[in-house]
Length: 372
Image (tube, rainbow, N blue to C red):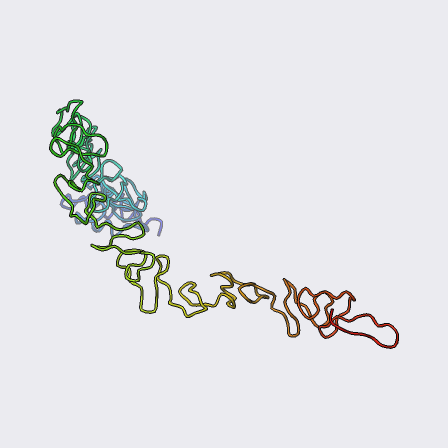
């Protein structure tokens, strides 16, 4: 009986379609039974009213982009999970357009084919797809413009500085004579390298006190022209800060460079602000240390003694246990060491040392002991 049920439904619905207002027919009944299980009853009921899947994506559909995919009608022209056909999933960063998975373009970019471009600055798609700028041009604001850096102008297919180019002086094609040079867009008499024309003469504007920096700029009597600027006369060991000269190696208000002021408890040494240390101490890494005894700065800054050493007199020596003394790189007992008896390097000829005194060999009943 159950096996005959789908055929019974098809027959009944077909009968309804045949006697209805022609919004459906047996074609929908068969399609619903084939695609919706177990019986396609809901599909056929809607089809009898001219609605449902049969009219949306079935044989009665007038939209070719609507397809039946896994029991539902999908627009394969725009559905990312069914792009172009059922179950065709677009990748991450893509979207379905006209049934094709295409890149999803970020804001400010537009799609040309399968890629995204910025129409505002893409040389091959300037303003619109396929609008390629010519050689010597670049895309700016969606318009092809001359590809010249700031300060240069395009003449033909190349860029020139019209302020200084001999063959394009002031304007494209204006050529200066060999005896003249292009300066500020004007052909002027040629001066040797490092000099500029002021009137009918050539001057070094970096050093000339009557034409310092530019023509006619005259320095004062107590000034000189240095690098195109009027500067006070400073001796070799001093530098100019403002209108005065300072020794940047020792000046606490201009230490190492102008206006670098040392703190109240600091002094300027060799162009660096260092702590103002008391007598017997030296500044190391912004700290005052005694180089004669400091194990981290022994003899000079950052000279660190080893773990089994201590700093003595500015040298790293062994850190000897009680009763022993450092001699060179060894710890010795000066009371009994015949090679260092009483003091480092004092050697006993007898080979015996007692209480820091060399013993003489005994003869007879009495022994004569004395220091060697």
